[in-house]
Image 1: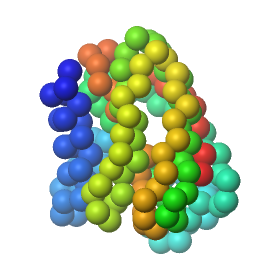
Image 2: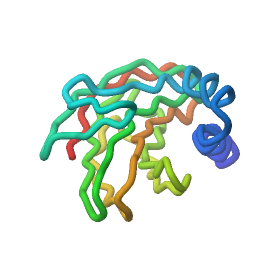
Image 3: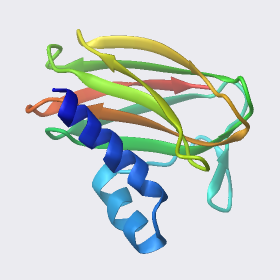
Image 4: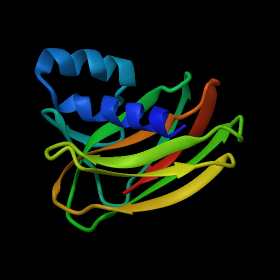
Length: 144
């Protein structure tokens, strides 16, 4: 189980590679942007206290990334997710796009309400990874 989590993490960090490599990894990770925000170029400036609905289907050992979100230092990012089957394990986290640093949390039980605090003013991605061998259906929201 630990090795699979490490492989998922490596896949997420590889998004910082060259543009050609980035495109293939982005497609593999289902990167999604938000339509409830004001777009300026490729950076999305989220309005204060935005609540963004999310849902998707994750295949075995697959990840999805939401963003980028331009956030200030010490902002709270709340990720609320329910999923089925509830006995599957997910890894959720926050990735600083500029530095590649991230924080994550392994969650189980079919529900999580997790808050991450940003550590720098930067572009961030929120990621959700299926760390199991079954297909997972999830829905929830991201609040910033």
